[in-house]
Length: 169
Image (cartoon, rainbow, N blue to C red; front, side, top):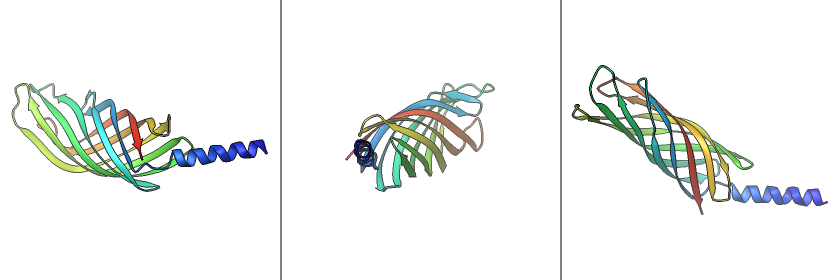
């Protein structure tokens, strides 16, 4: 009887604690690779769980500064994105994917002038562990397709990041 009550209490706690939040927001940082260069990306995200298994998320990534050995100067890359985010909760762990569009901007510095921008697809996968009812930490991988700069034409940018997210409501 004690084991049954304990099991019911744990299931009840996990169901209410780990249901998709009406509103969430967080920060991320890690490593971005673009055109045989890497830098430290930083970003923020906000979203909402519109259904128990799918949400909508948006955010901004400052991918970092990327250069080319044959040219002077570098490009500061950043992206705004909007994506659908299907997820599944397995106990205190949430596994998710995301896919949508990103608008990128490349500002040139250090002897190069001008900028490039465009829109293309982005997608990724990740997992989060709920430390408390409202706080999760996790890791993810994202790919931002089709970034065109003076250094390369139509290259993909990959980022591997850790994140912390606050789930409200």
